[in-house]
Length: 115
Length: 118
Image 1: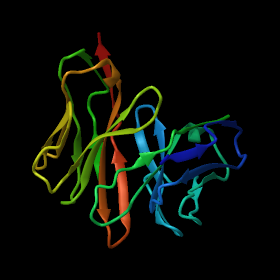
Image 2: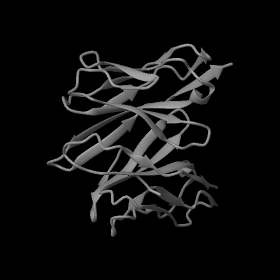
Image 3: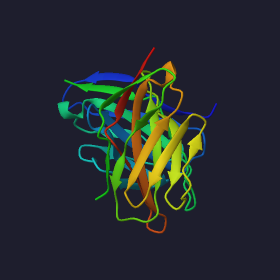
């Protein structure tokens, strides 16, 4: 089954304790992206990647890191989480070409709480 | 900077009736893509419909259609024959890409919560 998976689905942590949210897709997509969703703010793009070793900042990259060492994986790293990073996080992937409307496929979301 | 505005935080519609959700955006680009996503209580993001800016014809997917007004930078979603399963948060999204420079960004609106009344 074609899908985007995220782990963990729920996480409660404390300020300053490094964490990683994993994202994996099995559709051989070039493009992967991370979003955070907050009430009243919609989804905001954190980072995106057009291919292995190619990443770029979205609109809210502060406090986050990403890496793309393999095509299928795009982990989100919070080196020193703070309470303002409490949010619902989505990973998404799509094909990437210069011609297309390429549909994004979203993971199920990760609910992160930073105390 | 590109922005997407959904001015209706919440809307209600009677079952079987028609409702229109509004979305406006701001961009200086001429080529871009627009999308409507549905997010039910399960939180899963589901693509409802998409529109390429270079196409004048409005996109349609079954009971869902858009009214795309490029000059006015407006992209509204019409849901006909509303069903209880249509109740969800709806997000308007804009994407522009410069393939040659590797820029491929999405911008989402703040969402409209649609309630469907039986």
